Image 1 (cartoon, one colour):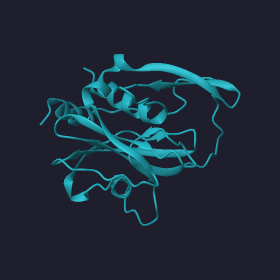
Image 2 (cartoon, one colour):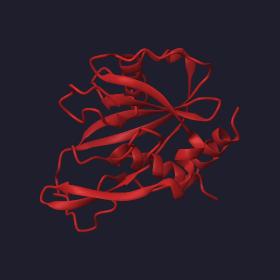
Image 3 (cartoon, helix red, strand yellow):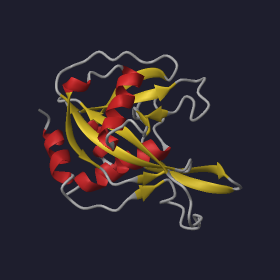
Length: 195
C-alpha cells in the first residue's frame, strides 16, 4: 500500500475548519439563513496511490463537462453521508460497494450552488474496472495522489461570477482542468497532509 495512503489516514486525525467555494473571496457576504442541501462525494483512493475522478457528461444541466468526484445530494433513503457517497458512486461509475474501505471524512464544504458537501474518503481494496453511467459521466480517470497532495501544484485563478471576479483553486493534470469545489476539497486534504 502507498505510503501516501498512510499519510492521508494520519492527516485525517488532525482538526481542520470547514471550507467553501468562497474561501479565496473575502468580500463575498453570504446571506444569513440560507438553506444548504446536504450532499456527499467519494474521494476514492487506490492502493497504488491514485485518486479516482470523473468528467461529467456534456449534456448535464449543472456543471457539464467539469471534473468531479462521484457524488450528489443526500436522499431520504440514505442512512448517512457515507451511504450517500457510496450510492452515488455505484450509480455514476459502477463502484462495487463491497470493494471499498472507509478511511475518514474531510470537513464540510459549502458550494456556490447551495450544497453543503461531505467529502468521504475511501480506499479501493482491489483493482476495479469502472463503467461510467453515460447519462451522468463522460469519463472515469485517475490522478496520482502525490500530484494532488503537493500544494505547490495549485494555482489560484478567477472568472466573472455575479458581476465580480471570483477566485478559485485549480490543480491541472494533463488534459484535465480540475478546479472549483473539487480542487478546493483536494487542496484541503493537501493542507492537512503537509508536515
